[in-house]
Image (cartoon, rainbow, N blue to C red; front, top):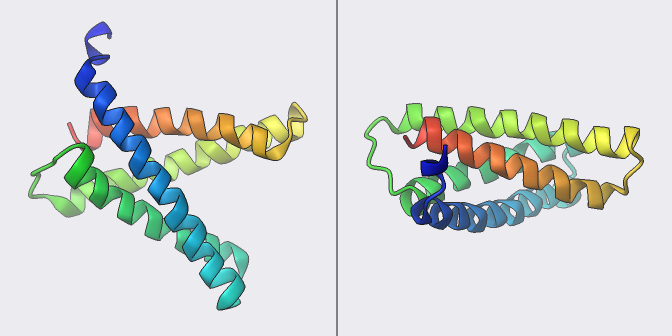
Length: 131
């Protein structure tokens, strides 16, 4: 496992973080657009925002972070999206546990949830999607 932590992996992780941050902006922006301006149900708007952000994150990570040349784009995207959905589940579970069971403030708990989910998403994508 020691060979997993290299300068190259750290560099990819930092790029992955930048892409992830852009995804948060895309997610919140589209969720706001659909929920507050177009008056679509908030959970539907959230799903739309998540889907658009995950899609943009995939393409940015494919091209910039991992420099993938895999011709099987649909399979690669499906793996990335599945990992993102699992990450969303992990994030939601951690957030719920920290807020409801440990009585943490929502946004403080969200920081922990995002950190853990980011690690999951990165490692899973390194090992499976972009391997």
